[in-house]
Image (tube, rainbow, N blue to C red; front, top):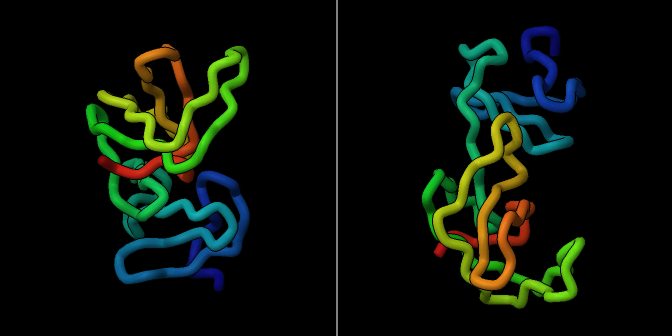
Amino acid sequence: MSAIPACPQCTLENTYADGALFICADCGHEWAAGDGGGEALVVRDSNGNVLAAGDTVTVIKDLKVKGSSIPLKQGTVIRNIRLVEDDAEHIEGNSEKIKGLVLKTCFLKKA
């Protein structure tokens, strides 16, 4: 396994090659084989669809929001999302009632 590098995100060595990508089995981070750590960030929703800045997503389960008494209900639409730099697991966005949200992508699906 010396030819397969450690994950640049979590630094664990439980990685494997999948075609032209390396994938970390622990954190799920993916990077291109020739990048050497300067990979393009791939952000995916709960269904595996690639998310980009400006996309619209939907919340797939009720979520409690820290600092607010209003929960995000299932089906809430978050429009015009922003990607968090160097973090494939979080996005930023606003709902109609709550502004300045940071949400985990595992609770979202692309609309």
